Image (cartoon, rainbow, N blue to C red; front, side, top):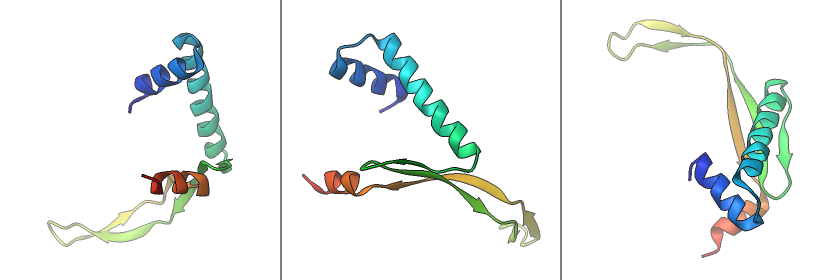
Length: 92
């Protein structure tokens, strides 16, 4: 499912205009991103938790040449599913 399909599905369930749903979805995503950029976690009870994970700098190897290279420190987004989501996925 892509973003447009998500908006269409929510609009159909809520019987609201797609324009309004689009604004809500965009605001939700923007708020999650802003919160994570600030280094905070976003926890939606029953659904899951979004957080930023720090990766330290390290030395790696170029697979073609075997030469040692420095890999810079980075930050990445992580999601951990909540219990209700896990349980829903287990049901058939």
